[in-house]
Length: 224
Ligand code: DC
Image (cartoon, rainbow, N blue to C red):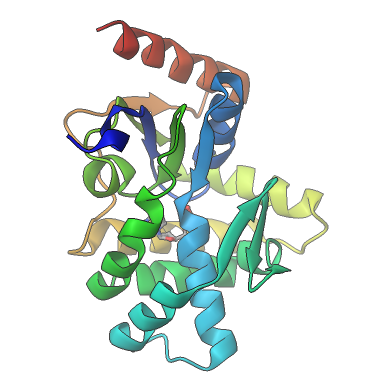
């Protein structure tokens, strides 16, 4: 057995703007675990491609770029080539670009080991689309965290307004539906609840309640 296999992973997958990132980061803090936002890796890859003039239609070129990315996470910020890019990769356009390139198997393959390297003691909480199905299939706890599309559009709307960005609720709803459809329909690691994942429907939960549920399930899983 690989030594890292003993390090517990909590894999939280789900659709866009479900709040899984917030819940995952808070659960990681509560447990003193590391946190990996895997979507940020896809977002940075697409952002770096645009900046370098690499076509978002060219899987091999994108995979090459993905392998060589100088990417670092530190204190909630994401650095590309030493420069903070957190705000630039959080736009809806960056999310759409990420979703497009994430459908390409060579890109996913190129990013696989980079994601697995985040499995460090004492543990990892990670969120994305295929954390439980592909990247960490032996995760101690797998969760499919979701909310209705209306609720997710509302949450994203509030988030953007708070950050001082322009936002249009109807356009956000449309965007989220399209992105979810693409992430779920793709052949490579589609967004899907696996049979061994707990369903966490958060439309009527506060963030605190959702985090608490994750911690309860983790305690149960660790007791076995
Ligand atoms: O979680 P997010 O919205 O930051 O992710 C952006 C896009 O990246 C998402 O639309 C699909 C893709 N993604 C993926 O395919 N697999 C992951 N593990 C995480 C994100």
